[in-house]
Length: 414
Image 1 (cartoon, rainbow, N blue to C red):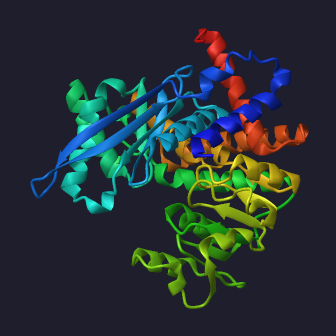
Image 2 (image 1 turned 120 degrees about the vertical axis):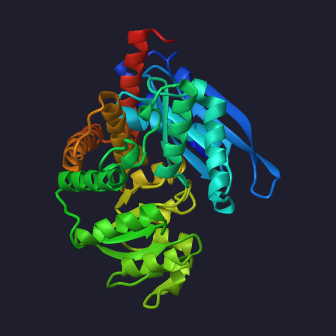
Image 3 (image 1 turned 90 degrees about the vertical axis):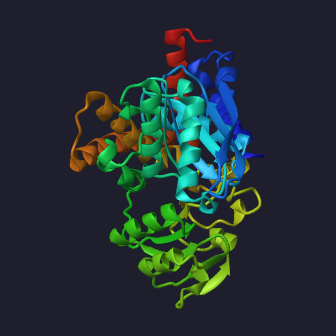
């Protein structure tokens, strides 16, 4: 299945598992598919005078809980199904931590490394010119994702403000502090991972200290999490990039890995480690497995060989529905992406609130609010799943879908 079919399968499973809530079966089809898919072509005049046309997708899942919220992804492998799936996951993610936003996702087929800064700015501003009627505070508020950053959000916010003749910092989040971004925004996703993991481990009667960790993915997410785990006295024994995985039983020096990756080299250049092909890493011995790379990495083909008893999903959709069933049958706990990754969207929401008030919080206040909301959500998901002797992903979906259906009933939107 592609990731969109995975998202639908997860939702169908949750609906069936939660049917004792006496849900109206007519509500499910309304949220199984996005409400609106926008596909546009954007011409950009390149530095050499030629014109290239780039394809953009926007998926807006459902407007029962307005406004839409979702990330903008620049990547050469973006496709419509991926964007649709990510918009569904964003709806569940926002709702499971009780943020009053609804799922959306933007994606453009482009390798930004092949563009100059001026070409990248043109692409970003042309996007806003084409779509500004469909976005904005109270309607649809995008934020940065893969290969997008605060600078790009500032360009887009500036273009939107000029088009609507009104300075509108709340039209985009993830902006630089100088353009009315939020303190703590860029630490939020990573800090959210830690808060969720600490909460679940505490409820299991465990701690992070001395745990042996495998991290699949030496990108920004994986390396950030690795550093945070080391700060908490865990040991990174395996780490991989897109080609190779390396192992050191005494722990891998993550600062050295960062230097290697900053030089655009493979982790195999790390001197004091054994190596294997990257996907073999998933089946190695550890206490906690952290997939932080791409979707569909843990499948029915390798799930039976996974030895970790706890998986923390940093990537979006790394585990297929078939693998979920196998792992649950082995009593492997999975902290799902829709819960683990909620820190970023939570502080993006805080940024929208601050933009609307024109009053800005200090970083420690942002962290306090993040910690309170995300630990409450994590405890709710874990305890509810344990009570019903089920897995955390299914009950994260059930908790979210229950709130969504209540919003649909209140507004009578189906």
